[in-house]
Length: 361
Image 1 (cartoon, rainbow, N blue to C red):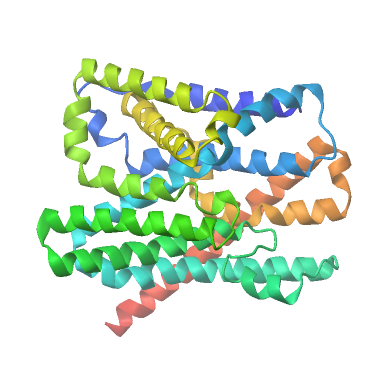
Image 2: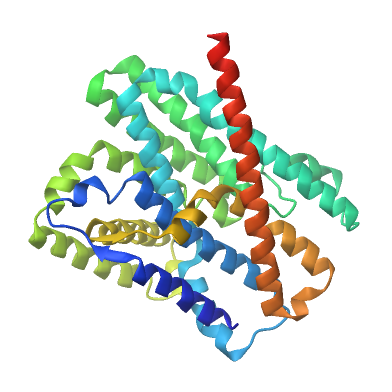
């Protein structure tokens, strides 16, 4: 099946699972966990398609419209993951206070790191089987996410770094301020630290642009959490909502006139990325996306990001990329099965740990 038809199929799922939100009830669901899972489900599929198409030996005529969409979206396909993460962490901080920061290393940092290390070991085993063993430097650095064995470790490196920056920023802010001032000051520090992180990744880190070009979206999510009530009050007016949409659309069109224009200056690229994120948020303000299919893929977002590279490695080794659509079908099936299994095993261990913790207490 040509790639553009696959994309259209995904879009049809989104369209048929969408409905207009009630005029007075939109605040309850547009940025809920359920809604964010469906949105993440859309983008995790787009990420898979964007990666799998890079394995093709050649393209057919109906693949090129999809490739144009892929080039346009670029790294924006991961933007909502960072936005929802920054928003969710800030929401938790507002509810739980500094206790949340104290527990964050064990609750978020360590579980993510362990899952990534397990995935890295699996990738190493597969690469040893197919006799594609990396050099020692790549092997060692792959366990930090600085290098990759095919499992897109850059995303984990960025998320782990942002967890550290989040903790550090708000520990500092709570030493200086209290209440809402601590949140605002902490978000300012987080933004500053994130910009420094981006600069360090660019130089002297010499990392590829995807290591840092979505980092600011995490901060955007944190800021939105702080000003959520004011933003909702502003958007409650249809006129203000429409004006916001028009401005966002205008800036989006200007900043994404072409990929060449976006690449002229990094700040233009970042502005485009912010506009894209705001556009998705504005859409979900008025439109509810509820789909069991998208929700299912949303729950598999992390393992799908981690494990989609495995079938790419295996099926490329078997030279199946010469049959591109078979390659897509098999890779997608194996990725989903691996991700579902990984989730079930992780949930089982989590339940066991919770039982042990309850008995110990």
